[in-house]
Image (cartoon, rainbow, N blue to C red; front, side):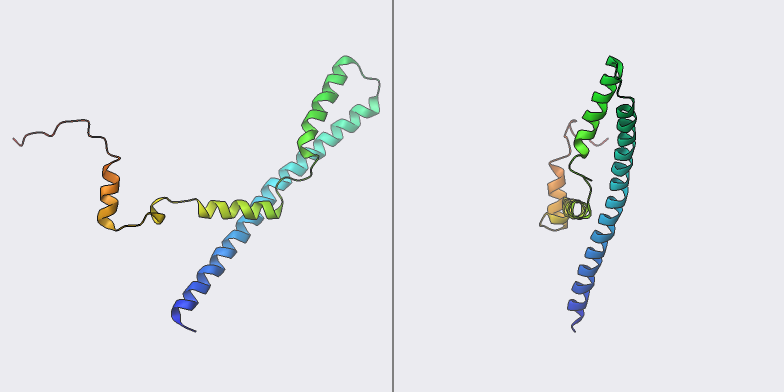
Length: 125
């Protein structure tokens, strides 16, 4: 196998390994939090339903719980597939300069239009 092909294959393997590890981390961090929140809300809901003799204050509390449960009806938001997609968008949207064509001098000229010219040049003393 040619050296260039080995380097390309290694880069592809490293990129996919990075994506899989990143997706696993996002999945573990986010889904655990959502599951924990859902469990707490379910416990509060069960406690309110057991009382069943609801006053207006208890009804307001039940209403708040129902409204907080609404986003969790669809299940866990951060699944592995969504986390993998997020990891792909992270590595494909970082770094403007890497995708700008040009060389060393072009980059310097490109940067010059971003530097404000607020003062007049001084005369040498």
